[in-house]
Amino acid sequence: MFSLPRAPIAVVGAGSWGTALAIQLALRGKPVILWGHSARQIRLMREKRENSRYLAGVHLPPNLHPESDLARTVSHTDDILIAVPSHAFREIISTMVPLLPPSTRIAWATKGLEPGSHKLLCEVAQEVAGNQRPIAVISGPTFAREVAKGLPTAVTIAANDTLFASELANHLHSGQFRPYTSTDMIGVSVGGAVKNVLAIAAGIADGLGFGANTRAALITRGLAEMMRLNKALGGQQETLMGLAGLGDLVLTCTDDQSRNRRFGLYLGQGKNLEQARTAIDQVIEGVQTAREVYTLARQRGVEMPITEQVYRVLHQGQTPGKAVESLLAREQKKEIDH
Image (cartoon, rainbow, N blue to C red):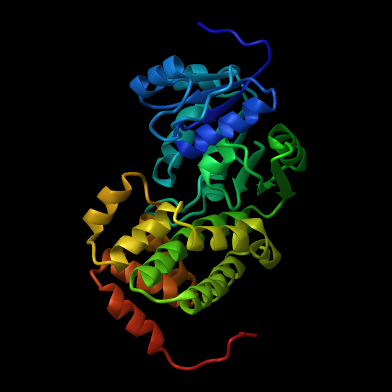
């Protein structure tokens, strides 16, 4: 059994993003436990002092302890940061909560909606953890490798407790990593989910050989879709003009470090869904999120034509070319709806 001199922060999820955040926290001097479900992967991380699968060549600080026992991980901390895929979010948080005292605070850096229920992850967290526990979501334009390498990055932390947001921001803040705080968990959650769907659309457009004009139009009209859904769900519109909305959208739609964009590129270039998945070989959040956002938008009566076409390509067998034709054939309308 290991011992740490101060209560550590537990990072749950040893993929690229969880590892990058754990490194950032550790470099700030905080003891960190990083949990991963694969005992073999954790053993290799301890031996090599790097996450060879996801962040090869990036050294793990000495105060970062990889761990494969979830109960041991969360029982030694006051603050937990979850970084697992959205489909595993409810299971992980449901497993943890019975092990935690009421004072333990929970944050997550997962982006997406809950599969099947179409719920924002902040809704899931409140359902499972209760309304009294401090919770927070971290989002923004972030590629894990750039964070792990110490390249300048900014994020938004939205919480139901301003003290938690401030303290979490302080844990992460450094000369290369700047968190901003917010109380708009809905807006930050919507931005982090919908941008993955739009990144697939941008990748498809580029894969089909369309140019910069198309990409800029898609990002702009995609932002309009995101804002319509956010308004319907009760989020603050100005949130989506910041890091968690426009910032993350531009990042994932324009850079090939984005798995969702690369997935769309492969589809636009003629690969089928399975070939594109195999080529990426990591979770592509936008695939499942497209179904959830499309269904949620229909339930709320929100018009999201780009999202709809991505959904039809991914889940109804529509070809990328036909999806573009459907978008261009839509009737003329005003750009701004009042």
